[in-house]
Length: 335
Image (cartoon, rainbow, N blue to C red; front, top):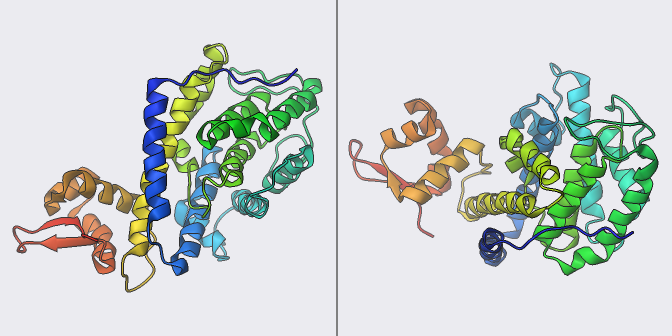
């Protein structure tokens, strides 16, 4: 029996698709110096690694994950959190290496899971479908005996019918159905999100590998789990889930656009935006210009905290200050 996802192209989904398309075209058309692309890719890999493992409870901060990505040792951190993050980087490298592979097989899924889950599973074996019953919150996934057949159907759909849909939709459908099947005894969340990213890469949707959608899921984990649960409550109608994922991709592309502009700006040194700096840039974009007191009130930080965020942006030429010391205001620099 062939897998047939059920959904409706709602007005909201259409609107989000249009916004996503416009943002993606703007990013593709942007003049990004070739020398900056590796820095953006490295930053995205770090953010994906941090967010996807944090969703599953990994305690490492973004800066600690960045240190591991750069090969620095974290002597005060337990071995398991480090192993989870290093595994995720290995999984991402595997996805990047095979990004444009046309036909995916069970063996590809096994290898990805083996890389992601090796030595960090509480039950089961990395790289093999589960042989036990599992429960995820209120969801009871299919019996272990049915897993292989259901994964065969999903792979058949992914390799054929998925290409008839926009990657915005097909990546979200793949993500949900994989989590519903829950084919492994452990590590399904990380694997499912990696597969959704693989679909974006495979379809050429993120040709530079600079999208970090997992940040959107991580920043409101309860909303992520509610969106997954809602599909089951709605009789496997994926419409709401597709809207949720499309909104996540829209927000992700807005952040990418901010990073692209920051990377393209003349800078005295390497600029890697912190989440608070991205929030600051969004505030300036939305308000046009802001007084210092308005900025630190909106950010919920002290005056010194706001200045610590602003100084690198001012030096990079991303933000400019106009007016006197008393009447000065900050705004985004004009291209």
